[in-house]
Length: 142
Ligand SMILES: Nc1ncnc2c1ncn2[C@@H]1O[C@H](COP(=O)(O)OP(=O)(O)OP(=O)(O)O)[C@@H](O)[C@H]1O
Ligand SMILES: [Mg+2]
Image (cartoon, rainbow, N blue to C red; front, side):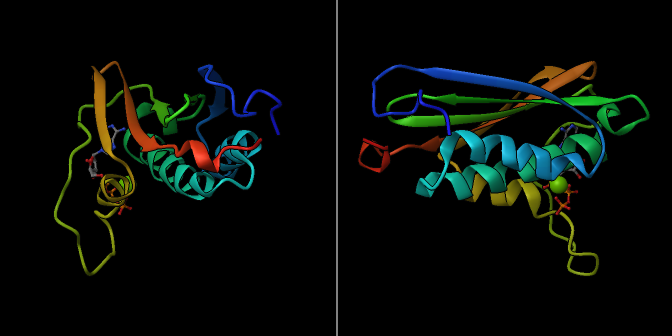
């Protein structure tokens, strides 16, 4: 647990780069959990990072041999931003029809449901997909 998240009004930012392999998704979840601990937003932030990191690996060059993705967690007094940086692809992140047969197409819908806002910046050479999660001051450690 970071001593930084102790109820102060400061903004904190942590970043880490991960190899673009599926086994690293749980590492990304643990990276988030390590800073948010047992706060109720920790579960939400972990679900979001899971979906975004999975997308980076499945849909971008981050998932190719030698590829990497990055995770940034911003923690302010009233919000969290979870961002995943990828190595780009010809496709763009978009909400799509869920496919009932293979159960796909739900990741970004889940992110949209769990976050106050989400968005994308960058281009085919590399994108950041971010999600904003309200962070109640009352939930912060004292
Ligand atoms: N980081 C990304 N870069 C480029 N395209 C992306 C990225 N993330 C998602 N996409 C595109 O957006 C589509 C929708 O993403 P979403 O996560 O909702 O569904 P999915 O990944 O296809 O399926 P699921 O998440 O349910 O397994 C993807 O099919 C892909 O075409
Ligand atoms: Mg997905």
